[in-house]
Image (cartoon, rainbow, N blue to C red; front, side, top):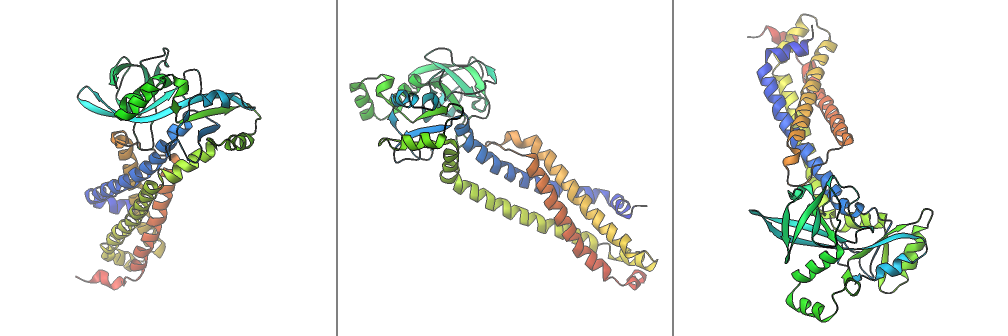
Amino acid sequence: MNLALKDIRHGLFRFVLTCFGLGLLMTVVLAMIGIYNGLVADALAVVEAPAADVWVVEAGTKGPFAEASSIPADSRNTVARMPGVAEAGAINYQTVEAPFLDRTLRLYVVGYEPGRPGGPQVIAEGRGIGTSHFELVADRKTGLVLGDTIRLGRNRFTVVGLVEGAMNSGGDPAVYMTLADAMALQTELAPADQRVQAARGAGAVKSASVAAVIVRITPGADVDLLTATLRQWKHLAALSQIEQENILLASVVDKARRQIGLFLGILLAVSAVVIALIIYTMTMEKLKQIATLKLIGAPDRTIIGLIVQQSLILGTAGWGIGLILILLVKDVFPRRVVLEPFNVAVLAGIIVVVCLAASGLGVRAAMKVDPATALGG
């Protein structure tokens, strides 16, 4: 017979309750891993969405995400004529709050030029923007559905398409609109003195400012050469896609990522200690039974197998319960929770190592038991 399973059946309710408690702890650990991954994924989502090769921003800044950037909108025409440039599009970013039904939505507004780089790559439902004004493509996380209308500034916009996974580093879901609408909205929401100044100038898009110009290069073109050429211009700077991602992670989400990472490390340490204590306590409670096994001549490997097998069953059950629970509730979290198979497998490996190490403490205690104690009262 398998002594480990027989002992578990003997105290089944207690063992199941212990597994469930450990499973809740594993749920928290997996949630922190998922939140950590989600933080990075959210931060990179808005950068990866345009599928750009080069970002042209204001000179002396790390815009448009780590720092504010403002360049003339007609810079796009100049950049588009450069050798090696296949496509170029002006783009704008801003965060707004807007009332919708009985709540207030916080939205990350992306203004782009339809037909040029900067818009959503994949429409999950509906269609892309088809008119020059007052249409939106929204991320599903906004809670908006096709046909909804929402007031932004002085105008009402109709949702014509839905996308998934489009948000900024703060977790605010994105909505896409035409660059002209986005710039008009930015002017409406600006302070009064800025609106007066904008009114005195010309309201045309080409005379206004945008956050960046997104560039896609022709096959075989040298990205480094193009960025080096753009950096020679006094009022413009250029960043490759990789540089933009690194800046965003280092500048915008670094502290939050380190804090979550530290908390995750503490959680893993606490989990290891809890597992070790549970296994050690389970072993100490069976010392008399272990002494009896020794008295009747059971080999050491039978006693070691009892402890190690129960440890692994406990850890595996806790890991499985935790995985099931986090998969059931991860969509309820306000921030995106991203669990990769690699993360889940690594945690399983950590639990196995911890269980084996913890069972070593139990085995050490079991080996010291005097068989004569089985004859005690």
